[in-house]
Amino acid sequence: MNIFKSHFWYNKNQRNGIFLLVIIIALFQVLIFFYKDSSKDLSIIDNARTLAFYKKIDSLKLIALESRKPKLYPFNPNYITDYKGVQLGMSINEIDKLLAYRNRNQFVNSKEEFQKVTNVSDSLLNRIAPYFKFPDWVTKQKTSTSNSTIVKYTKNQNKTLSTADINKATLEDFKTIDGVGDKISARIIKYRSKLQGFSMLSQLDEIWGVKPEVLVKIKQTFKLVELPYIQKVNVNTASFKEILKTPYVDYELCKKIFEYRDEVAELQNISQLKNISGFPLDLYDRIVLYLVAK
Image (cartoon, rainbow, N blue to C red; front, side, top):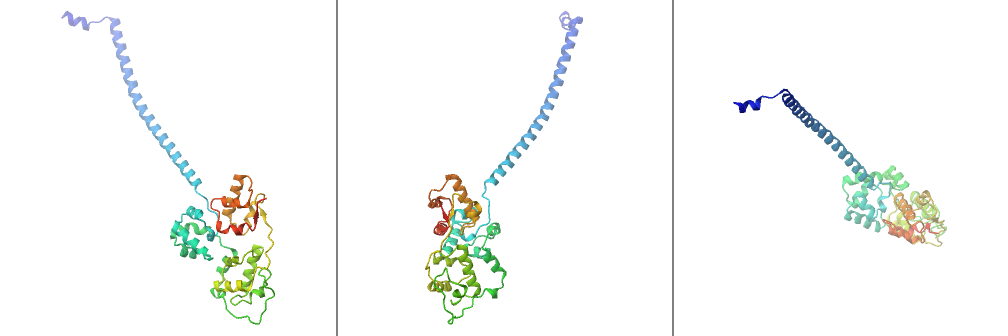
């Protein structure tokens, strides 16, 4: 009995110490309880912040990817190169069909004709067609009635030529050719003015709406007696607008020329244009008629 009493009988100081110990233990339990709840709240907050952070990162990635995509500018689909075609999303087969069509000196003059030649899908056509840029006379021609576009083949036996030089021929001279009327004659002269004169008879093939058999007759009748004098533009000093006005140079090509010029500081020779990625090599002999590197 004495043994049990010795464990349960305490003096005042001992009882106070035991009471204080119980209070301390109770306080620790309360602190642990609230710490767990607060840590849960903090974890929820941290998760929410983490999710928001990752969402922001994802949105920035999308913006960066979008900015890397090549921007589309108005362009003539007749001069699409392999590089440009791939950028637009065309397949190699579709690009080859277009290039083969152009190698026959034929041009597409509408988005319907472009699809017929290349067989691109409707979805791709709808995406790139808004950027097609055809010559002004093509656009005007579409607004005219079908009857007005019919070429009348009549013999003009009573008319004589004033010259055999295609760069000096008048409206009436061209009209002496069977199949060439007022509209075709005016179109030839207008295109000749744009080129500052024909430098090669093959440039006649670029005139829209002239049938192949009529082109043959024109080439048989007229010759390049004198080459035209062309005021060439210095590619190293010209402004963007000056080069853009050059025949055969569209906005996309002009942009590439300026980017290359900034890269090399100065072109030493005009043949360096061939080093530009996506440069239309089939038009090189025509473009260098108007550009020079000084």
